[in-house]
Structures are given as structure tokens and as C-alpha cells.
Length: 262
Image 1 (cartoon, rainbow, N blue to C red):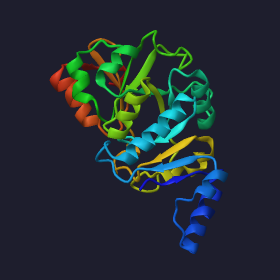
Image 2 (image 1 turned 135 degrees about the vertical axis):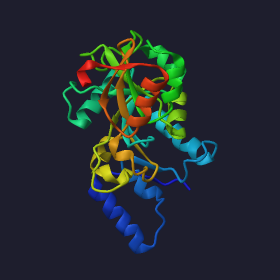
Image 3 (image 1 turned 60 degrees about the vertical axis):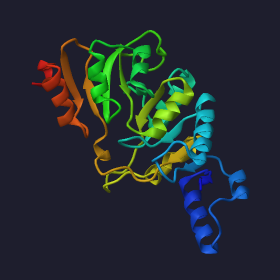
Image 4 (image 1 turned 120 degrees about the horizontal axis):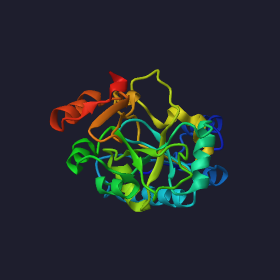
């Protein structure tokens, strides 16, 4: 079953859960949902996007995104905050939630490798893109004029992801637009990431998609590599796929590491 709930604050959520357990009531409560604000939609499995519950969750999340709202979603690395990249007001909301002044760039997330060409100027072989994506890698490329100018206006570059996560890929496909994506502020005290680790942010979000804990390598986030210079690469963040990424870049395609990193 899909778990639908809403919150005004993390404290309310904890009290709500405690009360339901104490009274032996089902977690799905229409009367409580009417009072609360943020929808929490729980995926019972990540193995298939064909389930009716996925359809329901995807529809609700897409509706929130197209309305200019910010949502929390699981990826193949860590939980992220997402909005439609082409929606300037939504991008500003993400900066506000993260407490940023706009100097820290947001990446974009797309559903398919071919979508990268709509929003980026690609200077590497398509085979290279497909060797790394979908996967836990963020490629930094020169942005195209199609991408919203209010997204990271201080740089001509953009990080782009195709997560190896069926829910996220389907979400991007249904939106038909790139999603601006940044990590949620999660604790680093445990080996896995779960949606309840950033409950303090929930009141600022329209939807939280709870996919449960993400794997033990998730704390490192994606490997971020700059491919904007032809024939060169530069590792911006080692992340969880550094060795495999470098092996592809150097071993298979003969790219040289930027002297800045040497």
C-alpha cells in the first residue's frame, strides 16, 4: 500500500506516528491528512514502475513539480530536492530551502542519455556518455541556451545526471523537462540514507517520496567529473564511482586528467 501523509513540522509528524502506534490505528488517515500540509508518499518497492501505487505517486509528484513546487526524491546515491529546472521561481525556492545565495550550482537530472543533448553542448562521444550513464555520475558540460538562464546564472557549465533509479527516470520522462536537483541535508551518522533523516526540511516541500534507505555507498554522493574541455577530464568530487569512472575515461577513451588535479 502507498503511505499518504502530510506534515506541518517534524515534531508534528513524530507525534502523529506515536499516536497512531499507541492507538493501534492505521497510518493512512484522511482526517489527519486534511489538517496536514506535506504529502509523504511511500514506495513499497523499487523493482517495478508498473505497479498502480507507482502510477499514483508519480502523478502526484509530477503535479507538484509542474505547479512550481519542490519535492524530495530518492536517487541511486542520496535523497535529493528537485524542482523543474525551467521554472525560475521553483529554482529560487530550492536555493531558499538549502540556505544558498545562488553561488553553489544545482545539477539537472534527465530521464535518458539523449536528453542531455537538449540542454548541454556535448564534446565527447555518445558511447562515453552511455558507458557512465545511467549511474552514480554527474557530468559537467557546457550548458546550451535552451536551459533556463536563471539556473546557475553565474556559470556557463551545468552538471547533468541520469540516475540509475527507475522511479527518478520515469519521473523525468513524465515531466518532459529537466529537474534541478541538489542533495538533501542528511545526517552522516549511519550507513544508509532514509527520507526521515531530513524531516526538518519536510515542511518546505510539497511532496516527499519515501523510497526507504539507500545503499551504504550513498553517503559519498555521485562522482562529479568536468568534461567541458575536449580531451580532458577533471574530478570535482570523487563520490562513490571514482575508480570505475576514471577507468572509462582514461582506459577506454584516452582522456587526460586536467593538470589542475595533478
